[in-house]
Amino acid sequence: MNDNAPLAVIILAAGKGTRMKSTRAKVLHEVFYRPMLHHVLDATAPLNPDKTIVVVGHQKAAVEAVLAGYDVTCCEQEEQNGTGHAVLCARPALTGFTGDVMILCGDSPLLQAKHLSDMRDAHRRHGSRLTIMTTSLESPTGYGRIISDDSGAVSAVIEEKDATHQQRAINEINAGIYIGDADFLFDALSRVTTDNSQGEIYLTDIVEIGVGDGLTVEKYEHPHPDHVLGVNSKIELSLAHQEIQRRRNAELMAQGVTMLDPATISIAPTASVGSDCRLTSQITVTGTSTIGSGCTIEPGVCIDNSVIGDAVQIGANSVMRNCTIDNNQCIDPLTRI
Image 1 (cartoon, rainbow, N blue to C red):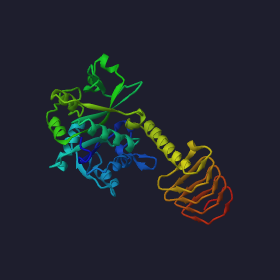
Image 2: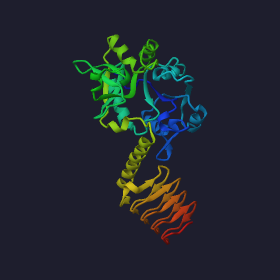
Image 3: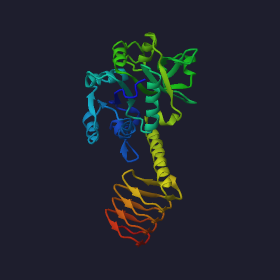
Image 4: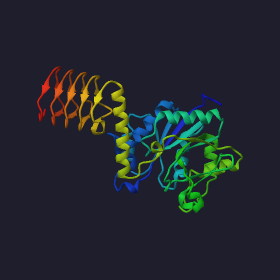
């Protein structure tokens, strides 16, 4: 076990996301006011990686543009030839690197740093060369299944298109997140073939290669299946938005903000709300807005890039945009400033 081993992160963000039914690259779609790729980067940041690599491809320039402000290295996957090929495209950026490499997908905005940290710690505690994240679903259709031996150790990951009827009945799935020793990882990928139904280099094949080399492939079971599932459609996009909104509101209420109908209240991560505020329903606060303490905001209010003082009451269905409201003001309903 080496708690101080270097860590590199590779985020796969080269795909088109055809099921989104959009001309926009999948990782650029916004979830709770930000591109979903930002949420993945923010989940990995607390791990303090020595290097973060984003593999880009489809709409490369647009994806690189939203990465401004992040300390990342971009590597291009010119030809979409599978997830294993995408990781190989990051190899030049890790020349001379020795340590652990964590691999994630850029379309998983619900990931949280705690679980990624727990996975890394478990990987190092077991002294493993490769650890794979799994989770269990009642309806695992569409996901690669985890094949385990009699002792419960991972022996292979089988993509659904290549699985037998019996294997498809398995509920434990591949969550698509790996952490492995860099030397093993790239050596194994160099041995992966395209002998599968897709004719692609499957990243999942490194599991079977590791087992064939006599290694024990560990698994970290994620306790919350919804957190690890990728966003592949506009329906899943909306569900991810709702979950992050729920987390945001839970944080604010823990800090002393009252919300009467939190499911209808959306406070952007760039905005702030003071303690003892009372927010009713159907409220949206966006941009760099700040709301002081002790305010009451009635239903249907929109606040954007505005500064609201302390003890302000804002009447129903008002719109505050790019303005400043002094302390102790009472704004009539249907006001537009």
